[in-house]
Structures are given as C-alpha cells and as structure tokens.
Amino acid sequence: MDRIANVYIWDMDETLILLKSLLNGTYAQPFNGLKDVKKGVEIGKMWENYILQICDDFFFYEQIENYNNPSLDSLSQYDDGLDLANYDFNQDGISSPHDDHNKRKLAYRHRVIANRYKQGLHAMFNQQMLNQWEELYDSTDEYTDKWLSSARAFLEHCSDGRDDLNPSLVSSSGSEKHNDTEFQHIHVLVTSGSLIPSLAKCLLFQLNNVITHGNVYSSWEVGKLKCFQMIKERFTSPNVRFCVIGDGWEECEAAETMRWPFVKIDPIPGGNHRFPGLTLRSIGYYVSVIYGSSGAENDEE
Image (spheres, rainbow, N blue to C red):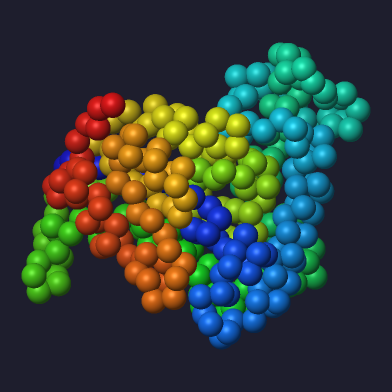
C-alpha cells in the first residue's frame, strides 16, 4: 500500500485563530454594525492577558523574550539531559551573548516549556482559572460565529486519517471511491509572532492536541521562506504533499517560491475560505493543481 503524507502548514493569527482583528476592530467592520466592535476589543484584551500570564508564569518569558528561536527543538543539541527537578532557573544567570554555555541554559528552558505544553493548561491553571478560560473561549467562539471551534474541528478531521483531500477519490454521485493509498496528515504552524507567545496561544485556543510543540515554528527572526525550507528538510520522502494555508502575503510568496499550493483565508462574511466554511475537499483542488490528483511528486526547487 502506498503511503502519502499531507503536510498542512498553517499561519496562526487570522487563520486558525482570531485575535489581532478583534483588538483593532477589523473583524467586526465587514458585518455592517451586526457585531459590537467594543465587545471584540474587550475579548481580545482578555486573551492578551491570558497569553502574558502563561508566558510569564510558566514559560520563562521575562528571562528569554529577547532570545527568539524558530522552534523549541532548534537548540536541542545543547541540552545535555541534566535532571532539572531541582534546577534553579532564577539563579543560573542566563544572559547574552549566545555562547554555548547560555545556549545550554536556554535549551533547558525549552525542554521545560515543551513538557508543560504537552501537559496542557489543566496542569497550569486551577479550577477557577480553567472555568474562566473556558467561558472566554465559548464567548469568543460565539462572537466569531464558531470560527475557533470550526478551525479546531477542521484540524481534528484532517488528523483522523481520511482523505477527503483528494477530489479524484469521490465519484460524481458524491460517494467515495476505493482507495489503496494510506494517508498521514500532519499539521505544522508557522507564525510571524515570536515563539513563546505563539505556544501559549496554541494552548489557550485548544490547538495543542493537534499541533505538537515540535511543529510550531516562529518566522520572527528568519522569515517564512526559511521556515518552509526547514520543514521541507524534515519531510524528505518523495510521497509528501505540502499545502500552505494563511491570510498574509509573506506565506503566499514563500509558498510560491517553494512551488507549494497556497490557500488564502479570507474572514469576509460569506466567503468559502474561512471558518466555518473551509473544507478538505476545497483544499484538495489546490493540492491537485500542483501534485496531480493521484498522489505526490517530488517538488524540486
């Protein structure tokens, strides 16, 4: 049986989540008064407070905010595996410049952040905080017409192993054709925001179950094209299909350079490329233009 890996490379803000457009009121504007702009701004500010709380209280942000790396694994070679159970992160004197000694201290923090990411918010928040967070998520989801829950459901549906991605596997009557190809679906996040707050967003917006900490990249320092190249180096099989989904020009240009399909998310009400609305079937048409309708091919640069 053939095996094809579909690697979906997602932008975060205004794609999988809505935050910037809530804070500046641009999300509500196209609704012509049907959305309360002030309420959206208030919701956005509450999310900002949660993001800062996780960053400062659990992710060492005050100590490492000036050291933005593309991923938590980017310094793993400096981690000597020291038992950190009794390690005093407040007294180890982490500082610049970025010599090997300080890179090791930073790698220790990355290891702790990765473990806390895997454990989730229930290991960080008490019950009162969890209840408040869940209420904020639900109220945001209601305000955005289910954007958050629809995006998360989309990722989960991709991960269940089905291949709605390939239009050729559906007959004219809408029923699925027999398929001897096994599919693996992998979600990777490439955000223009800095790494640590982006990991906090993944936790808060309930994406950590479908996007692992090792699949979260920050293009803050290196740009999206470099991140895309790093991702391609990880997935070297000839049977890999990449697809970029986002709302910005940078990921569009980087996808074009890599010769990968790009799906532009548009938050305008009534659009197909938004949440809810975007489907695997619609993404499949973009993928088939690049890779054909019956599997992957090498996309040589």
